[in-house]
Length: 114
Image (tube, rainbow, N blue to C red; front, side, top):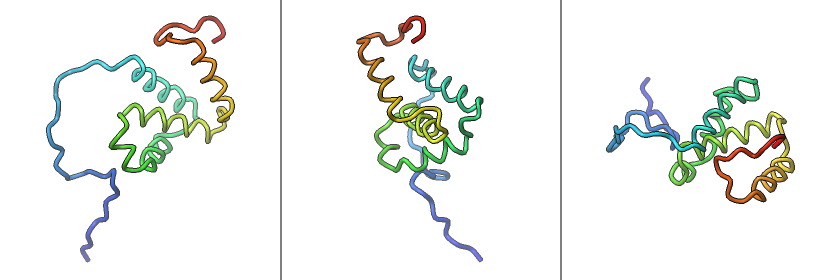
């Protein structure tokens, strides 16, 4: 019995991809950090690739249309770390406030203990 396969919005297999930019490019520092964070935290057992993918797929079509690849990844890593109890939303908010209070320090070392 043959049935039509129902595709979720993120399942683009077999659909035309359009133009593909094949030029080599370097990643931004923050993108490299997101990738490193994902590797480190998943290696430490906070989540699996299935957990990362679950959050990515549950974000919805709008996220895939408006967010970059690494913006979606950092959101997924964060959600998985929250679910694993690595930190709480309150702890994350406090830390974000501390970082924001430093001003424009992107790429700089925060200093000892930071």
